[in-house]
Image (cartoon, rainbow, N blue to C red; front, side, top):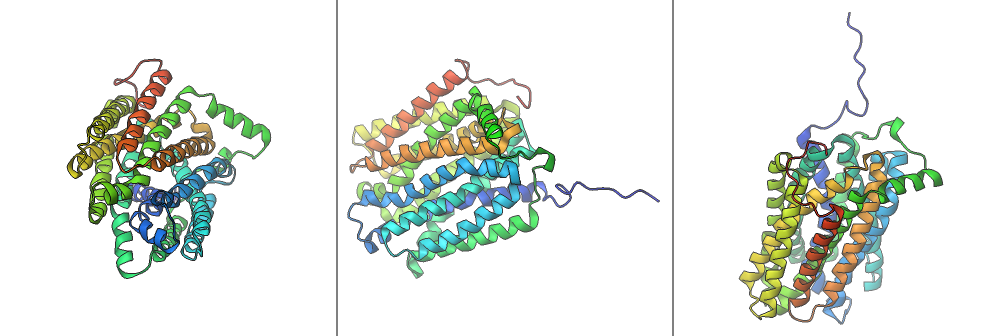
Length: 414
């Protein structure tokens, strides 16, 4: 008679690779759904609450991102102590509750308050996705998993504006938030049933001033972590500037507001293509080689687009083509920058993900808000922001890598 096989409770019910990627992507998608489904609804929200300036409607997006950034600062430490799964489930529960609160808002000010809270709860997914993947994978394999998850996740920004527009055709804008609450609830149930705890009991860290100080120092003293986090924040700022401004661009500059949904889907789709390319080649070529070249491409296309804007030649074709190229490079760069930022700090993955995510998100939200509020009826502020963010990110990476870019032949797990 054979002795019984003792299974690790963390892995006995673990989903397979494909389900794991799909689940991770679904958690990530809650953020994109909460942002991009709002784009078609901004005029209706502004009309109902008598928001005088079209630029002020951008606060619906910015508030979510600021709450999203601030909350990340705390979530990682909690997950390092209590485990990934319970903290994630609580965050998903609050996401659903605050989505319904947004639907019931009685004023624009209360909508902004509940959007802050909704963003804060969505941060649980952002932080814990990175931590959960880092618990299971390292190096280029982590970059591959994140890229594959990002491909699935990109269905959210591609489809979210269309979903928002479809809801607006049959119901008021408030039902978009009801739908977000329903999606959050379904993802929470999926996590509850299928996702095991990925942090072993012996790896959990107590919440003490000394432990927090040591963990924070471990992250903040790492040159690679800091450099790639800052670069990711700069690129996020450019992206948020685009999201804040895109509805006004189509309405006031291109005079094609009816094309916002399909155009946004086309542009967002190139981010998925970039992530697919990364997942296929990152193991062979390395994160630095692909990420650095993608950053160069992002900056070059942003500068070309700025030139079109300054020359007064902006049109629908140039806008879509150049924006799509930038977003493809963005997908390539950020998938690798995120993995590189986490590479040396796996021992405190939750705290690291919190600090990195909080800093890059808040920085991106503030840069994006500044770019969006600079909207003046042209695309010049938008693409000046893209160019400046790209050049600043190149400078940061040069300092981080001590001037040595495009490393290719590097052992796996570097």
